[in-house]
Image (cartoon, rainbow, N blue to C red; front, side, top):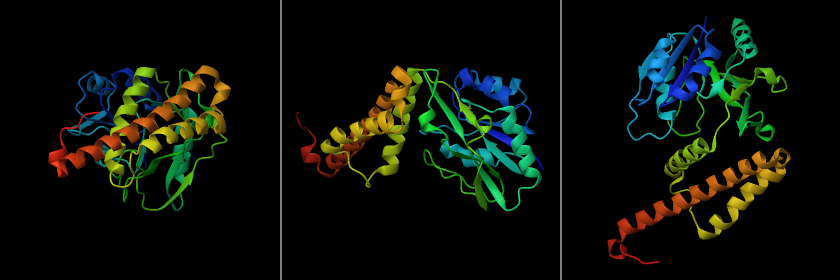
Length: 264
């Protein structure tokens, strides 16, 4: 009985080596690459990883490749790790102790420590992620921010033991904005027909998100980095609603081509 680490990648050359160094003591490392154009695959092969490919196509997130990647693993247990995450030796030991006697538990939520501008976002902790589970009977839906469907009971690793948390690496602002753009576009596809991007919502909801993160989640305690984190969440909400509105207008123009040309 062993553990396979599964890492989905697309142009992760900047992050991958540090991630691989942190998981090198697991039984197997599977890197499922979505046709990277940088040195991601070369780095994975140099580190002795099993490398498989999932066609990128028009996919903007890793979730469509998750289920395929998980079932390329050869071990009974799968630990899904992102290329920008670091695994502690304490978490490694905890997982191997766990599989010796898992009982009826088929999956574990793992706490995650998030960083922005080199500051730990304590307000987001424990940010539980369902990443560790039995491969048999599991299924990962192909939607952004989805969770795997596990055949059995799931539990949480105690968040009080912070040494057992995954470390989500620091992001610079270029990556923050780039990821925000990809995720909001994917969210539009998921929410289409359920929520509308009205002017009122675009005015009000970003402020609600800002206040929620900055005041109620305590980001104000972290100075400039905390302010930026709150504004980031507010901006993401605005762009999601703006993209929903844009999609709605495109649908209307397709249904009523006579109104295709309009001026502001």
